[in-house]
Image 1: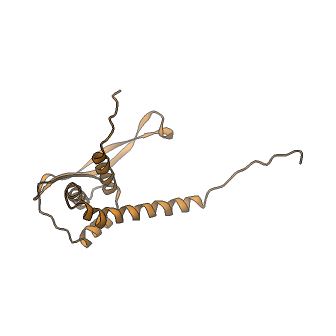
Image 2: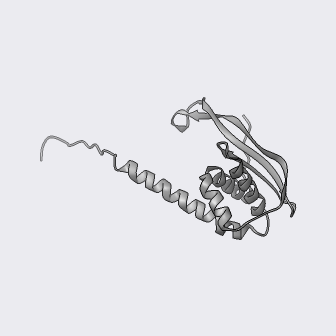
Image 3: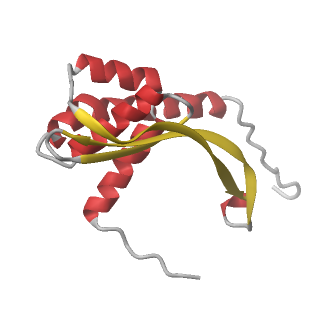
Length: 154
């Protein structure tokens, strides 16, 4: 088995925003993009295409890997007029979401990164974190705490 190398700070940051874009609700990403009033000229390096990937799982997170099932994904690559290259692979069959994710990826690699983070990534991250917390709170309401009483001498 090959050893994994540590990601650089730049690679880790890109991995984080790519993950956020891939998991973001498509409608919200499109809405934030429109609110920001962003239009970018670009050429396709790889037009959006829909395909499938095999999702693998591990029992308990540490057991032997097994094939869980297939999932639809859309991927694309583009080059902006400024010369930045952006890539995207997103869940589902939404070509527009993939296009916007690739445009954000390209923009995050340039001087426009702080503005993109403030206008798109930070709101998406906050909303997704709040949704996870709300889901966890709903699940926590169904939690049953079992305890054992010790019998015997007082």
